[in-house]
Length: 378
Image (tube, rainbow, N blue to C red; front, top):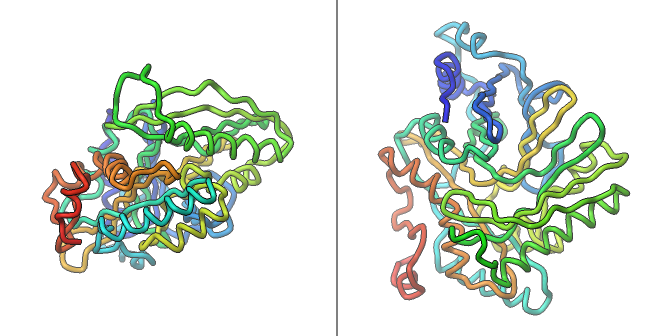
C-alpha cells in the first residue's frame, strides 16, 4: 500500500494533536489518498466533504467535515495554534465480558426461535496504548486494499479508524444507485465451499430487506449472483444490488440505513433489542461515512472500526467494535469468536505497538471452547 506524502502525514499529526476536524481517506482499490480539514465547527454546506452519522440517527444529526483546508493550509498554521475543544464523547475503559454476553445471547436466541428474524449484537474491546493513532491506522489499512479506509475526527464523534468492506450506497449523475448485501461470516476457506444454513439465512434477511426497501421507492432493482468476499481472516457472503429510477440520494440513504446487516430484522424490533441488551453505546459504529465529490456520492457502513480518545493517564484509549447476526440457529461461543475474528486485524495493529489492556481482567478475543470461556472470571 502506498503511504500518504510527507505533508499529508504531518498535517494529520497536527490535526490529531490540535483536534482540528479532518479526514484522511483511501477509496477501494485506489493508491491515492484524500485529505481535507476544516478549522470551523463542522457545518453541512452541501459542498465536498465527509459526512458521518451516528448509529440509528438520521442525516440531520450527522456531523460534516467540509473540504476547505488542504495539508499545506494546516502546515501553514502557526506553531502556537491553540488546540480546539476536547471531543464530546470518550472511549470506554471496560471491554464486553463473556458471561453477560453469553446470557444476553441466550435470551436473543430464544426470542428468535419464537419470533424469527435476527438481531446484530456487538461487543466492545477496550485497549490502552501509547501507539500513535495514525501509525495504527496505516498499519491496519495496509491489509485491506479492497476496502474504504478512513481516519477522521470531529468534535462530536471523536477520532475514528475505519476499514469497511460494506458499500451502503453509491450514485452517479444519472440517478443510478448501487448498494450491497453483506451478511454471513466464516473463517477463510475455499470459496467453492458451500455456506451453512445459518449464514445463508442471515444473508437472505438482508437481501430481502434491501430489495423490498428499494422496490417500495418505485426503483427498478437488479441483484447480482451471490459470491464470497474475503476480509482479512474471514469471508462474507455478498451480493451487489443495483437500482435506477427517480429518487434522490438522501432519501434512499435514509431508507436503507441502518440495514439488517448492522441492525437486524425487522429493523424497528432489532433496534429495540440492541438498545436493551447491549451495554455500550455504538456511537458511529454501524452508521455511515459518506464522501461527497462534486455530483458523486459514496456512502459506506462504519464497520471494522475503533473510536480513539486520549487517556487521562497516558497514551490513548481504543474501543474496537465488532458484532454478528444472531438468529434462532446461533451458538453463543461461535458468535463471540466471529466478532473476535472480525476485530483481530485492528486489535493486532494496536497490540503490536506497546498495547496495555484497560480492563483489569480482559476476556480473550476468541475462546477455544465453552469450558475455556467459563474458566475466565468475568
